[in-house]
Amino acid sequence: MIVARNPEDIKDIIAGSCVTIGNFDGVHKGHQKLISLACARAEARGLVSVVVTFDPHPLRVLRDDRNPPFITLTQQKLELISQYGPQVCLLLHFTMDMAKLSPEEFVQKYLLDTLNMKEMIIGYDYHLGKGRAGNFETLSALGQKKGFTVDRLDPVSVDGAVVSSTRIRDLVQAGQVWSVRPLLGRFYQVRGEVVHGMNRGGRLLGFPTANLKLVDELFPKPGVYAIWVEVDDDVYQGVANIGKNPTFDNDALSVEAHLLDFKGDLYGREIQAHFVQRIRDEKKFSGIDELKERIGKDIELGRQILAQPDAAIKLTRPDLGNARTQK
Image (cartoon, rainbow, N blue to C red; front, side, top):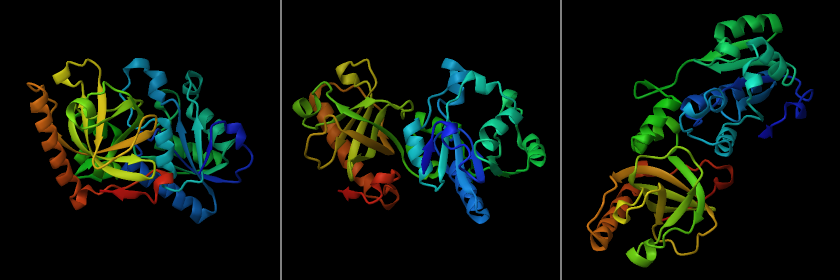
């Protein structure tokens, strides 16, 4: 997938395109179906398949500090979008000037002049342009005038409810990570560089942990979780604690992952933690001995959870398609 951040870089080089456009936060099952449909339509008509999305997320510009934590940051979003086959992703820098464009102005400037769009496919609730005036009806009318067709994808439902970024966000924040997988098609993950923590895990407790330098915005509810951990091209079982380590009276949120059966140095390396199932709430223990006993039980529960067939990990990063699983 070609990622173009400057529309001028691809202007006049695409003879015709089928475009889908959106924020795609989470790249969930609804987004996946939308992107796949655009790719199929493009192939059938001999067009270039294009995904148009934004950085920063429009809410970050329009609502400033009143926006929710996002499910996927830009790099992960691009990695996920690429899995569903589009040839080009146009990543537009969203600004207040862009927000002031009417639907017709936006379509002409970014989709017709740049992408030579012949077909547009949008989600059931998508709007674009100033005042969200560009809905399915107005875009269809514009297409009749400008020479492109517009199609709209019906909502995608799982367990009787529409898949949405809001629903996924609420489940993650409630700690219901197992229920998120059917909506995403994968386990929810966070990633980060392993940095030095308080040096308590291995030295004091006998369970060394990888402390993540947090870059993501959305985290599961504090507690202990069974996780898969990606390290380069390998995958390990693990148990993670999210929270403030109340036994040690910490104040800052941390994510600490204990990799089962791992030996080696992780400092300075980026890892990904995939959250499979919540084991328990975070708890303040009476002392080190009680905490060590509880961690041992958490690890055993984690092994049991991750051994279940339904807990198998599906890798999504392009460079990890042939990863080896370490158990």
